[in-house]
Image 1 (cartoon, protein in one colour):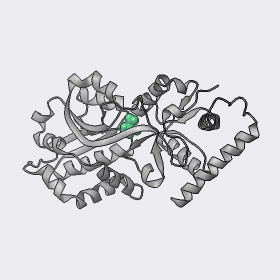
Image 2 (cartoon, helix red, strand yellow):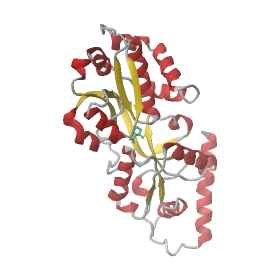
Image 3 (cartoon, rainbow, N blue to C red):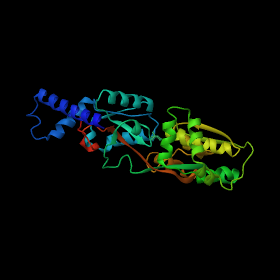
Image 4 (cartoon, rainbow, N blue to C red):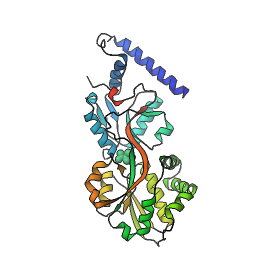
Length: 304
Ligand code: PBE
């Protein structure tokens, strides 16, 4: 904390020095200091937000955000990968440099770094998001015991975070196994009165992010313990919805709703069963290091 505070002060000072050095006091006469700082910020960032995969719901929301906020005129979203975004974020923090990424909770990045969400007054990234479980039509009749467990499964952001953090050191299988062993009371609740099966095949589909690798792997092991032969396949969100709607997959624990994957949900809602939330209190937005002197998306200045 102490260290990060002093970083903030150092950064604040170097902005001030830079501004005096530019000698643009006249141009900025009717602007407050805060505006000068944030105008500078845009230049420093090359008017770029560091984003993730083109197929992510987050990316769609970020593209939309750039259109909806007039002050983001001239800003760009750099699409790439989550791994790339995390590397860029880590490097910026090591060098005490400014950076804006598209981020989400639950995620270990908030445990590893001091970060904050930029306020989003237009709510283009939504408010509180949930993660839902969906199943294919007819699953309840075909596999009542799996359906029952899928329907009952619900956990807290802290649970998911525990698996995600643990999976930084061990495999997701092992992290999920550990979590299940430590939470036998929940397992008992979810499996109470459920009849075991003998090697029945079930196909779970998921997305490739750590959040869903956590829930997907926990469910995979849970169903295996009930005698199912489980396949868990990570795909893009669009394909995940399509697979369940076409009954190519049996279920998914990966939809982020109502906003993040809302467009896919709308498209397929008549051909899927929504089993409701498996986690509440998720969030998506623009994320910056705490040491940055900016609080809202609206503080950003358009490109000159
Ligand atoms: N995420 C993680 C995904 C869903 C899970 C927020 C990066 C997305 O589609 O944006």
